[in-house]
Image 1 (spheres, rainbow, N blue to C red):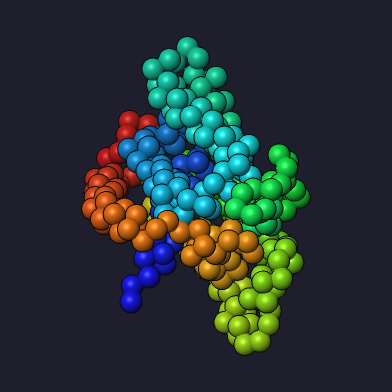
Image 2 (cartoon, rainbow, N blue to C red):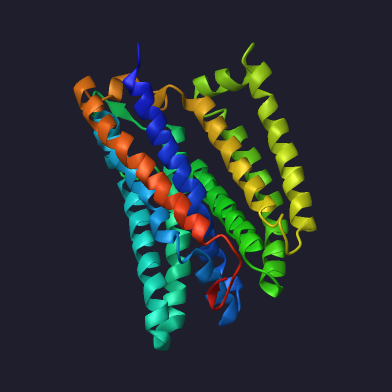
Length: 336
């Protein structure tokens, strides 16, 4: 028998993963933006994401809308608990999007738009990481509603996850520029990536270690027999991918393998997401509400699945086409 709840959990997880993969690198470029020289370097960095940045955020809408429609109880609990970081994230994305458009059309205030672009990227990223940390550390639930206070989301652990995501997105942005640019800007991006990669590996280790002590079920999943036979391979895989990424960053030259650092950075994010799934499955609110307890009625899930079955392939098709069309190198004049 097909379990529609699991299918919808998979769709939402896929949408969130797609958002992190596709919007992470352009947020990362915004985070790194002050490090680029005013003029050709900043213009080239912006041009590298100009054709795809707004389409990348489609996945955020799908993930949030899917959560509300498919798991309304979870949405009703999570939103009041995380109002502050979610609103901060949305405002950051708004400032970033407006700055992206206006810096080209209002050169007299370009410096202010550049500040807004960087600030919006930093705020949105920190808010996303803090939201994840607050969800992982547990949300107070009373009955079928949020039962905690206004500041429950703000803890040392949530700040750690926020800073860790900031480092991770910055690494994705640097690796994207290694792939898409050449010359001095590519060399500068390579230097940034060499500094950010060890920082990200340390951050992954700290978050993973801290997470295992947040909930009893996390510790059980990762350290108790026989599950430890499988979970023990995760740190090894992270170390191997990290080593390969370090070598790829150091060996990059203008040519056909410039994509390798970006691909390996994405693998690090992928392994982190697998680790997250190991910790929380099958809960949608860890330790409080499972996906089945939060799910919408079966008829609603079937109705929405028809729409998702049409729209998700369409989104994948136009996203893939956009990346294919703009697959070359970029400079201040655009893609070529």
